[in-house]
Length: 150
Image (cartoon, rainbow, N blue to C red; front, top):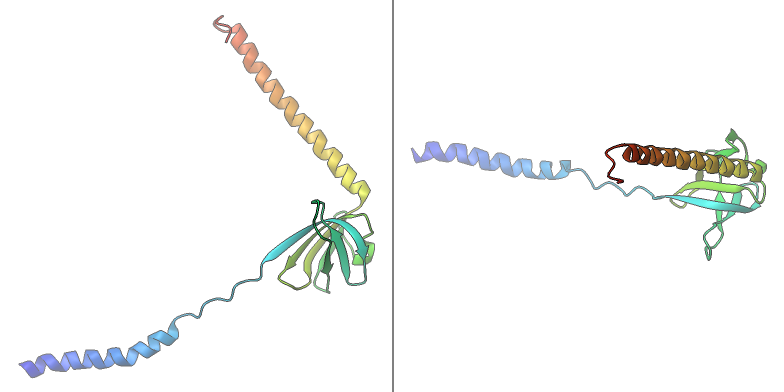
């Protein structure tokens, strides 16, 4: 009887010892960390054949030179462009992954930047006016309501 119990146990032990190294190899290797994406925004201070230097608007920040390659998507005022279409003084937003070339560079002429600022100010004024109308209606309703003045 002891022999009949030992045989299955021995087989289980043998299979476990054989399978352990295989299971250990099947564990996934840790993934390499993806390079961090960095956004660089500011004003173009120089433009070369394969790079643009951007001075961030934040006071005390140093200028950053961003390189471009044939895979970099470049737009000026929302339209497909090349680095040569970017001029000194344009507002530039670039996305750089790791230490490589930018994946995307969006530039805006001073005229487009002013137009966008004016559009944003107009939308804000409309929102503020709508917010004011809503508060005014509530106040009017309270004034016409139960007469408690609140």
